[in-house]
Image (tube, rainbow, N blue to C red; front, side):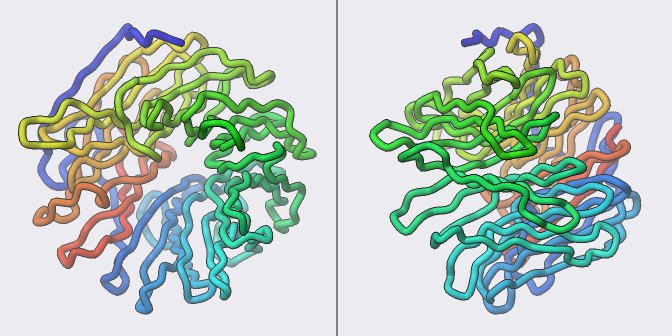
Length: 443
């Protein structure tokens, strides 16, 4: 295990910036959209950008009180809404959780609900220009509960991962590959190990393989365990797999320079910040680092630079509480050397008495962008990739009159041609939540 001693260490403690004000060299707000059709609870969870377009996905609460899928596509330069879809599959809760796109289509994945109230593993493909639905897959896998959590694509196939829960309450890892144009299922697998129970959370395609991460709970063994598998993209055959690190969950994955970089949580309470690098060809563990301080479940993300030299991770860590205040949590960003695991630099953003969480991260042209929340506000922070120098920051407070610790915040990020696109949730003056997307100048 790496010691994590940095060559550069930046501890940046800042106070709140006025509402919607970016500072530093860059970070100008170019446009934004705040979607709140009927004054109910609306949420943006993920965003993808490319080919002059930006696609944001999430959910909106209908007049009947159930959640509908929302897909909104914008002109990346102007913010003009190009097309929109709101999907109510069976007058029950539906939600889009992840999106990818190329020059032909937009792939949206999430969870649907059928008329019998079974949760569905949901995949929908749209024409990128007009927004027409090209195909969809709604699968329940002979279970009462399923869901799609992660997606990636290349020119030949789309790979979607998630889970299905059987009637006996056992959760199975699901991995499915589709043809982009038609939706034809190329191959599909469920948990291959006897007695296995688990969830697949994320997937990254690199070369001939798909790398899938999540967690397993093996019968008779104390778990969960970090699960990492490499699948052959042509056949779906497993090339290697590793199930290890007791009491750990893998949440995100990136692949670069022959390394599979996995981030998540570990430890006795599954609350240490965990990062692992494994050899992409064999699965051999190359290095690992943990914070060994309490962190948050579902709050870890990873990105790598184009040269494959650095991995950037985002999450949060707890600090000793201030007198009379039980929770103090810092927005955490770290940079590692991909080959050695050496910690290169670190940022802990901690305004006074803050529940601050970094929830997503991206690298583009030598800059790192981390997004999340800090007590009632969106947070966007831009760093110089080599040194960790803070270049600019925005703290956008959607409702200055409301203290909201847990809902308001940025959830996803994408970059394109010198712009940064951030989506998330903001409380309105009426107390409901709004679907928000904001576009920034990157430099």
